[in-house]
Amino acid sequence: MSSQPRIAIDAMGGDEGVRVMMAGVALARRRHDGLRFILFGDEARIKAALDSHPNLRAASEVVHSDSVVEGSDKPSVAIRKKRSSMSMAIAAVKAGDAGAAVSAGNTGALMAMAKLALRTMPGVDRPALAAMLPTLGDNDVVMLDLGANTECDARNLVQFGVMGAAYARIALDLDRPRVRLLNIGTEELKGTDEIRDAAAILRAAEMLPLSFEGFTEGDKIGRGDVDVIVCDGFSGNVALKTAEGTARFVTDLLRKAFTSSLRSKIGFLISKPAMHLLKHHLDPNNHNGAVFLGLNGVVVKSHGSANDKGVANAVHVAARLLEEDITRRIAADMAGVAALSAAASKQEFPVK
Image 1 (cartoon, rainbow, N blue to C red):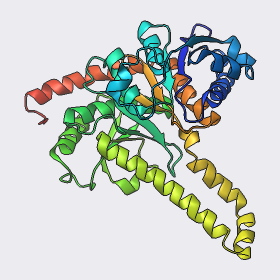
Image 2 (image 1 turned 120 degrees about the horizontal axis):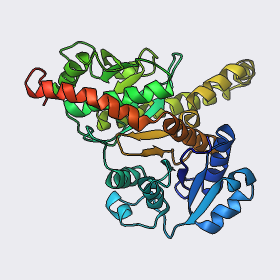
Image 3 (image 1 turned 90 degrees about the vertical axis):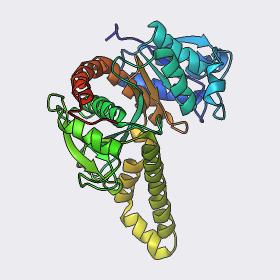
């Protein structure tokens, strides 16, 4: 594993600062002891944080950056910051100095920089942001797109489905992930023309390593009966934020209920093990690490407020995708999609 490509880390992107970013990367290295890193950011602050992590320090190169992409920066502004820690981390992937980049910074800026520098893979029109969401089933669910593309046509949705299935085969260890399109109903006639056309193409894609199972609705996202949920970025981002808000609502409501009286406090003590299980299941740090799929390189977005465990999970996602060669898998699957697209152009499958 010593020959594994290094991972470029934007050490300045997280809300919690360099210390937490370095603690998270150090935690990830204990899980993947062969990993090596290039750490981009304020050299003095990074080296000070590394004093607490000698094992990480021995496996890392520190590269000073002159600027930082702020959370308020528009993508057009961020792109001009060529010497920012985020820009330099992505440039390292483009140059081949690193196999993947991980950042907890501005999502829009990261997407714009990554797409501009790395470009999309052959056969992919637009990259998509994919993440793992918790479910009641045995596995999490891969959902995409979560905000990179607000408007999508049938071709985009088909590509997202193929890329999401490739990711699910790695992350969930599945041979043929179950794929569904997010829709306002499960009946075949429901939804927009784009969704129905995408369904027709995916339904005919029997040669691809996925199992298309039609549509799913928003209230079924967490049921655990599907492995990949595909949607446009607008719907996906709304669904994701709604799920996150609902999780906070439930935990805050339970906290309020359990502190409302002496009897409630006694009830909390009795149910404490179950509450810990619920907290673990809903903790976003346990599912941290969204991936930009469809680029010529691996780029992973960590949540800005992630703690050290969350950062470690994001680095783990990057390491796993490198180990399993996600770009090669997607490229192979896209070759099959090309045949479907050729058929669609002959009106065999109507694509808008």
